[in-house]
Length: 283
Image (cartoon, rainbow, N blue to C red; front, side):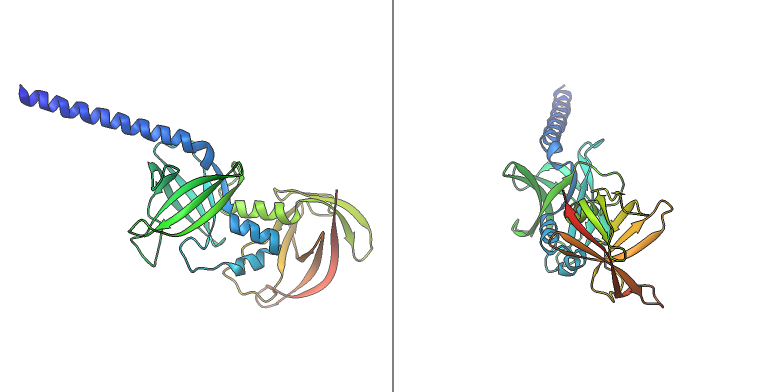
C-alpha cells in the first residue's frame, strides 16, 4: 500500500512539474512573441549603409575577428511554434544558417537560450538572444558567452519589417538598402537627351516612371567572385525580365548611373563607360 501511495505521489509530482514547465514556457512565449517577431538586420550594417552609401564598401568593411561579426540578418517567425523557434540567418550576406531559440530563461530575465551555433575558435562558447528597449524602440542582442558565463561579444539588431514575402534570409538586407539608398521620388535626367522624367523607387524593388524598366535590384553580395571594378552595381529589369546593369555613385541628393564595360572572358564589370542618367531627389 505504501509503495502504491509513493508511486502515486511521484506521478502526481511529475504531472504538476510538467504542467508548471508548460505554463512557464507559454508565459515566456507570450512575453517575447510580440518583441522578437520580425525581420532583423545588424544595426551596425544599417548605420554603415546610411553613412557610406555603398553596399560594396560595407561588405568590404566586415571584420571576422569575433564570433557574430559576420551575422547580418535574423528572420524570426513565431507562428505555429511551441517551445522553440527556428531562426534564419544571413552570414556575411553570402551564406545562410539556421539556429533555434528556446523559450527558456537565459542569463537574465530578458534573454532566451539558443542551441549551439558554430564557433570554430572555441566549442565551449554558447549563445543567447535578448531584447532591450531604447527610446521606446525594441532591439535584439545576440550574445556569445564563454564557459564562465562571461560575454565575449554582442551584436545588436534592428527590426526592419514584421515579416517578409519570401524565404531568402538576406531579404532584410535588400529591403533596408533599397529604403536607405534609393527609395523615394527623383527627377531622372537622361545624359544623351537632357530630358527630365519623374520616377519613383519603392522599398520592395518596384519602380515607376523609368522608361523600359519596372523593377530594380541593388547588388549587396560581392563575396565569392573577383572584383575588377570597385563600384556599386544596380540591376534594372523590364517586363520580360531582361536585365540591364549600371554602376552607381551617390553624392548628396544625386545618384549617378554609369554604363559598364565588361571583361570579355568572365563577363564581370571591368571599367566605367559613360554617364547615362542622373537621379536628383525631389519631393
